[in-house]
Image (tube, rainbow, N blue to C red):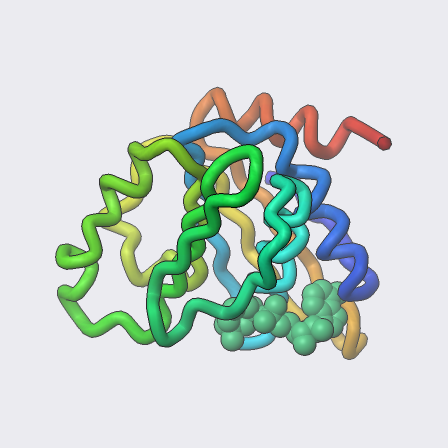
Length: 155
Ligand SMILES: Nc1ncnc2c1ncn2[C@@H]1O[C@H](COP(=O)(O)OP(=O)(O)OP(=O)(O)O)[C@@H](O)[C@H]1O
Ligand SMILES: [Mg+2]
């Protein structure tokens, strides 16, 4: 587990952007944290890093939004409003095994559906209005390597 301090919104965007080059098709990122913790903000940075030029909107009312204009497709999911049992209808596995990167906000609601390998990112607020703490937990060898490169690359 690694903790990263995010002193402002821009730091969160930049960290997301820096992760993008190390991702590959079929990667799953699970984002947890309260309302306004920074999950979508991080995803915006990630999308920019993938070269996606569309505006990333919170997918709350659609549950899944797809972006195809980057180096890899991005599947951005927000499970917050999912009804109990509704996860089965989403066909999550097809996204997770697919040709893109899946980012799941509020992933704790679909814990049973997650693949064995994923990157867990948990955002928490601090007593500073614009500061967040990010807890990073890689699951599986692939993501251990990804995290190492991501955080040790000082470009
Ligand atoms: N250090 C920071 N990192 C990220 N966002 C920050 C930071 N400081 C302030 N903010 C602000 O906090 C808000 C984060 O909103 P965001 O939509 O990213 O949260 P979220 O976790 O996706 O919430 P939701 O669960 O409602 O989808 C934004 O308004 C952003 O500008
Ligand atoms: Mg969000």
